[in-house]
Image (cartoon, rainbow, N blue to C red):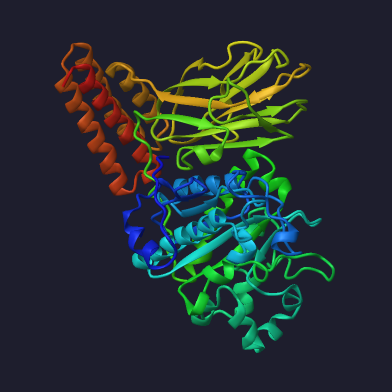
Length: 550
């Protein structure tokens, strides 16, 4: 991301500068203490406690100087979590969330407190505090100008014994232990919540929005991240610690529904294990959040339409990375079974790789990729080599989930690292999801690495392409007469291509396409049956034109 020096103060100055920001670009205050990654969507994320900078100009905050309730502990990995969320939301929606990060260690600045407690009177820390909230105000101004309403999320990390997300709506834990009927009967509860502007407009009850079927916590729990409050876990039990998002916190009260504002929000306190502890877990949680937010926020009139998922063109090269935040979900996905962990060394393809130290039967890593049209694709794999790796790593290439493997190859991961290793060219006879499965050969020893797989369409000669089409015709549910008619056109096309008469061959394929289209229109073939055949025939025509220099 590009950087730029810009130090908006709070309030009006920040609002007037909001329009100068370029989405996806990082901007910093004068000292580089605060970072604002500009957005163009109706959501804002802030990370006040994940920084690590300890400049000499700002002394350490102490209880003696700042008060007995001073906290200096870092919310570990929340800065990177915010960055993963930014990437995941862009991959999901094609739009950037607004992200504001305090890069100072909490021992120097607590950006989730009022300025007195946050900076302890230090002028440099006070200016950083103003810049932090000034960037948030700028983001809010941009959201309101573009969308009219938005959602603010303050990211934190807790160390409580119960491994769950704590969603803070400025409601006390004893308040959450009331029944739904009690919550709905007392307007004061709703009026103190950090989403009150939206809940007062909603036809749903306050309790339903808080912890019903369409509540944020319920959606997150359904996605595999236990949350409180939610339909599954309505309230903390007596004696269980819980962060409310309110006092002594500062950010959510200031930036979520303040004074009836139309940007509401939540404080999310994330558990460490399973959410923040590894890069993969941070990436996976970010992806889940990007999946959940659009459907949760839609009930408040906040629209986050998924990015248009057009099938990749046949000439696309697709790389499936082990980090799903790096993958376009329309083209590439990565899943594992077993106790894989993050690994990292200089031979990694991207930021890291996945490592399985003691493989067991059934432990696999799957690199899934979307085949947009039938054709022949070259498969390559990347791994970081190491002397302790297995010398018998099985790579299976499948045309679809549950299908018989098209090919199987055993490779030695002790060697050939940090490069693309070819696994040959394979024909995929239908459009849809395919995969490369990595596992340990039975009886072998050593660790497994899963890093990246590359899939590239190969360009066949026109005659080879016509032969592929003939195989596809053989799978169509048409009668013998229609099949014979289609094959006659293909035979004629192949003969013309063989003579070097590209135009005549293209004309025969055009007639073939017209006949398949007619079968679809008449109902003899479904769109699912006809379209891949048509797409491949069009691919053969394009390849013929390119090879002829047309």
